[in-house]
Length: 190
Ligand code: 5GP
Picture 1 (cartoon, protein in one colour):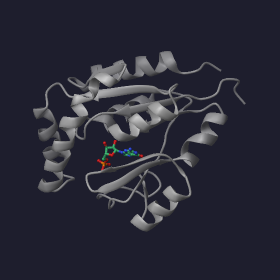
Picture 2: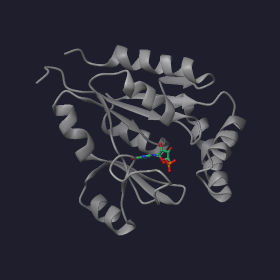
Picture 3: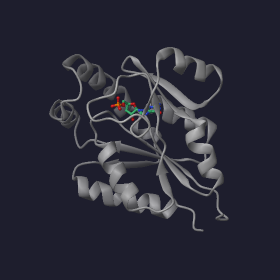
Picture 4: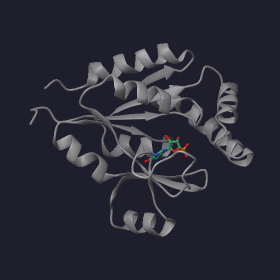
């Protein structure tokens, strides 16, 4: 077993900013770093696989697991519940594996309180209009859901100053390299 304990990397930013693309590039290039699969009450999108993309739970089951203190953090976002299960994180950290949490703002704040040692990274758009075109372009959300996500994005963008690390996703390759460089300087050496 490696000597060093793993670290937690929180990656946040508004819906449509491209967190998922940047994170998959990061995971491809980093040993000893794994993604925590979140739980959610929203319906699976086309192509999403249970256990790989999310643990899809009913509202009742999500509530029971909140009551049983199974979540490291959880939040309501766009009419659905999302949360990080302790079971996705604890054993990995003990085994020296670092973990990426791709979560929204309220969850990032909860982790800041409960795990101040976690590395917090905010992904920002070059301009707010790019969020709309990306959300419309990916075609996964209804027009109503897109408006809801864009409203929430205003609050999220206003909170950017809370984050010690901000990466602007203007050019995806540049942003990915910046993210990889940042994470690799923080990864524990074994
Ligand atoms: P989506 O429905 O687009 O997959 O995710 C909506 C938002 O929820 C995104 O900002 C995503 O980062 C966030 N999210 C995904 N998993 C979690 C989680 O476990 N906890 C929290 N707080 N937010 C999450």
